Amino acid sequence: MSEQPAGGDLSRLRQLNASAVLRELRGDQPLTLTELSKRTRLSRASTEDVARDLLGRGWLTEVAPASGSVGRPARRYRFNAGAGRLLGIDIGGHKALALVTDLDGEVLNQSRIEIPADAGRRERLAALDRCVARALAGTSGGQIWATGVATTGLVDGTGKVMLSDSLPEWTGVDLGAHVRRLVPGPVRVENDCKLAALAETWRGVARYAKDVVFLLAGVRTGAGLIIDGKLHRGFANWSGEIGALPAAGWQQAPEHLITWLQDTASAVDGFERVFVAARAGDQGALAAIEGYVRDLAVGASALVLTLDPQLVVIGGGFSRSADVMVEPLRRELDRWCLRTPEIRVSAFADEGVALGAVRLALDEVESTITTGLRP
Image (cartoon, rainbow, N blue to C red; front, top):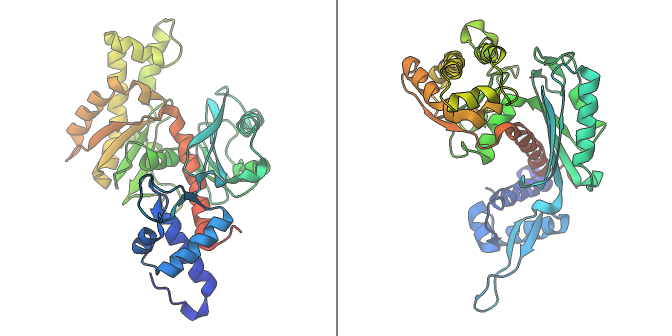
């Protein structure tokens, strides 16, 4: 990185230098000025100047010298994850979930409220308000630096839901504007499947993969795509919506499970009944799951054949029962795909979407570092 100001823009140069230093300090280990200078390719004097400035603004913290060092120990620095807070919100068909984290994404507080599937717009937004208020208990408003919000449906750049066919009265909700009335700082809104995929590449099972197809498997099926290490949104932010094509099989996939549930009584509630019965060897339950997976695999195969991903990740509510889904899915992908990618199961279950919303908020914070918008 050049340290010579272009066109005399010293302010912009300092922003770029600060961004480079912060980027290197986002790892697990603290670094000395010498190490920072080598990694950023800045001079020692410039590195020290940037570190002093970031310390003063709270972005960095100085770490105690390593034990056993000889002579005057070199000062070491790390990113100050406690300088601010992030808020991630998942507002879905059955719940509202809010996570408050530090700037490294470590969860400090969370709140969850169940929502009836047939809840209208007002009831769902009221549940979101209560969920956010509980999550923020003990956190001052000024501590929240940015908020990410995940929702079903297609979302535009302002945070408005353009289309949602799974939540009653949800099309047209200006979710960004609503959340901005609840919390300070910037608010970004994105589709839940996309954010679940983002969570997997950030802190999940796909964090070392560059090309990923994420399958949100649950009452509703969706997909998120990671291409060359980045979330793929598409021209109009509609990427991954292959489920809109009836031939893809995703619209009718849950019907296999629903039919079995309607014909069977059990002490276990909800869709988990099917998976519990399948593990116990119930042939009807096994057939229902195979039918579900067969339909799921049609759209999944189309995505795999198009993108040739390194991984297919299964997430969402059904991922808790992926032990009875993975092998049938692999067999179906083997039928249709030229190469079947490795299939991994998310460890986040239905919390991955909210974690992806946290990552979206962190993206906003990191962009302000680059542009120098925060004081």
